Length: 194
Length: 236
Image (cartoon, rainbow over all chains, first blue to last red):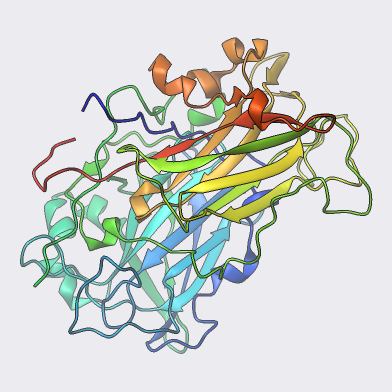
């Protein structure tokens, strides 16, 4: 341990991050026409008083429709890489705390050991007032594989588990899901220490 | 079947800021109250976006030449490496930079500070790190500015940096400060990290060898990201 460097501490993005980080085109992960079911995820970011957070930034990272990540450490040789799908996106909330991401529904990716994880999108939340970003995951409420997901199964409180489930709101292409991010309070989203 | 990639190390106590830090008032309503759920890293945490193929757009490393004329202020060179905590370079990752101008004003509609905008300064840049993790920006030294955290509070001069690294959990957004700034002692954002040695990571070093004579002052600033554990069982 002694010869290790101390990692740089995180600091808040502050209220003016749009200047360097806002990339409106990155909110659509389907621009290159990847394989998979089109979905849109809409929601709001809310604070401990249920007040919308107008200066939050959301980043997403996900596997492709087959459940493979576009990354050299994903060695799942039985699943194809989709050259049209990078799997990374970003969007800032608007004045009412709303965000929208357009992507494809990810396939199931492996967990530790022999476990299979239910389809999910990995999410990072940045905002003024967050000294470090928060991690959470978006699962899909209408996904049967949720029952076998190691992370979801580890959350005993039903209401807490539900905060990780995007609710289907409208069929179509893209199919619309709703996922609110509550930073604090009774309906607080489950955040992850990863 | 290839073995699973090794997990990333966990931060040592006190080396990262807490979510709730009441001296920074905006944390009070925006910090979670429930304990975060800890679990072992899966492929979802160990992988993350790559930028070596330049899909994020061209490098923009000279912030003094983005408009017609030259921005006002003290020209500076900021260079360094993106490393992991094992000291290994992090190549091909995206480093994003934003900052206010020399007068302490951001080119952003939400910034209402009574200080002039500079028509020759935007304050945003980006670069993909080289094979050795190196980067270099030319910019101007940002000014201090007031904020409403407490009466008569002033932010020390700082650059905002965002960087990705090898996995989704190596993501880092931070701020770089300047050595000897008297405002650091009063700044709750800087002070929020308890460990003094970790805080020092946030301060760049003046380095005469990086300065260019008759032109710009040189500072060194390395960004250190989480590194991988040595073994799968390494608790970090």
